[in-house]
Length: 182
Image (cartoon, helix red, strand yellow):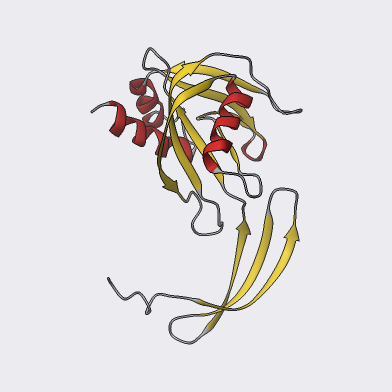
């Protein structure tokens, strides 16, 4: 195992500077590897899941959703935040049903991504869902989502032409390409 001690920053103090409904912001004082001191500000996030739903015909079930901070509609895989103490697989099942109306009988945990490593603690657990059954979406109040089925080839082209820019979705497309093209 490689010794990383020459890269490690050590927290010497911490202050919560913002407490929101979803996000919290901390400002930490740290000691750098060379002994100097600095400050790090970061978002504390409860974590999330993302689902890669594979339809019976092999296409992937995607969502179109308006994202306020960037003022546009994005194409994404279904995803959502973990509730306190919630099992990630149960969260994935809940999010798939709520946002798309679909349920799945076959679930596979794929891995974890850290989408914003420079300023957030968020980690997203990725699941592949197969053997889907269509139902009715159960969107949260104030949530507006449209579903669309896309082939893997169309999704890969959408990353390259700029139609898909969401980082977690781009990562999910990589996972799907590795698993579904075997």
